[in-house]
Image (cartoon, rainbow, N blue to C red; front, side, top):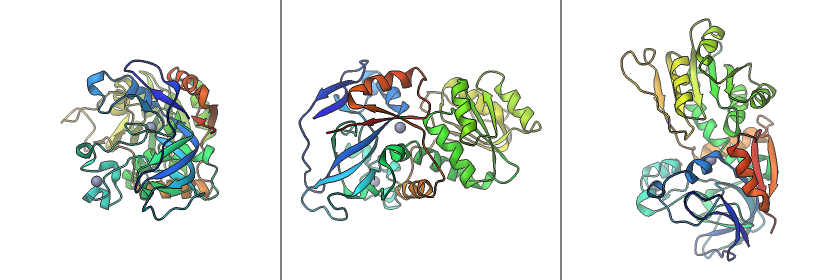
Length: 346
Ligand SMILES: [Zn+2]
Ligand SMILES: [Zn+2]
């Protein structure tokens, strides 16, 4: 079968032919219907060789949806033909974090060399993929896999970040969303669906700010040195109670720190290598800074329920498997409005 692989450090992703996978004991073979293209793949592909914790080549794709095609020995809980989404942050299933459904924070994943699909284990950018355990599959029901596959990361990750700050997202509050791309344009919709906060969206691109307004942002601001002042002006000088930084690069973490209100939450989600320093006088009083990773299995089920109720609609551009390298190029150039999704026909 074809697969989109990252084969050597510093190289671009390639479409290659690999053997068809077969499910071992406890594993599920999925016929992939859709795979999302995420900016964190680009972050991983720009790491130096010593910083990559898994072997290459790697089949990409950590946002996956498909139909159960075959079950390995001993698998229960899913049936051939079930439409499913893949919960990506695989853990051991046994430790105290996994027991709470927080496999994204598994205490033993590194030690046991358990990697998410597309980020160490073979991912979803191929006609078939192996899912290591049926518990990592969530029923899609009648949700369209192509339009909803990005919710497994671009929905789950902002959903988890927003839930951390729900007590601060009261009427009269302001939430700033930095980066109105794949995750950001979903975050705006989730904020509107889940809270009464006013949403100010930032991006460097006017096209993305137009999408931000279309999906519910109350205000949009170009992401530059003047952005914190503009946010202060829009909030009567107070700043934002919650800042969600989906870029996480040094320029945006600076904006996040400068835009925060007293007792704000600053949540750095993006992998851009930036940081917010904490210490007396560096931030408004009692500001909390956190950097979460992905979300829980239960939260993925909740996000899919929101989608089922019409509360979130991902804007997708579709590509064939042969066009996947082009999708990554366009993403890298900031040219994807919403999310790119690969359709790997068998
Ligand atoms: Zn991702
Ligand atoms: Zn675990």
